[in-house]
Image 1 (cartoon, rainbow, N blue to C red):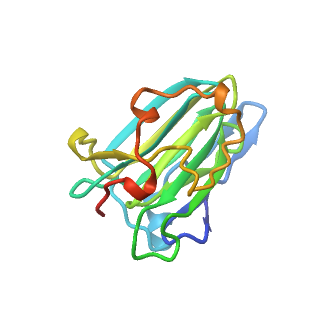
Image 2: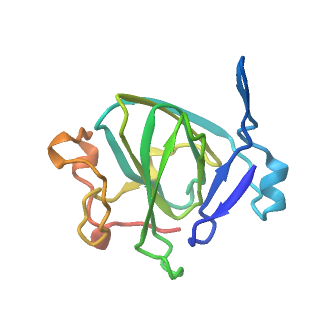
Length: 182
């Protein structure tokens, strides 16, 4: 498994070694020792899985202290644009976004450390997403940022009229007005 730096402290892309043959493929999707040798020592305690159709945008979500989450995000089938925003005020990348296409085909994963808002847009007809978390979900700690905050300059690559959002995701504050503490 390759660990690829992104330019954001702690935000890395994991690229598994995929072994394919006429029967299909095999890969190790997670290896604690490989991450630990790269300076990443995590203990995941919850897996979440979702399925969404084309145009569904979920995010940008985070959990505040004392329950912030690190997430390891991968796509089982389909394709998404995965987007994160750095909310760590002490970092030079504060307020900047990073995006990557994750798919069942490319099998890349994104390790999103605590202190980031996270969201994704489904690009294929449908997509199944699985992400590991190092903290349980706590609704009282949840927060969010408006996906189309002009200050973030996120190019979702899809027309606004084609996006499908939850009521909650339509009403998050912009970054400037968001409450977060990591």
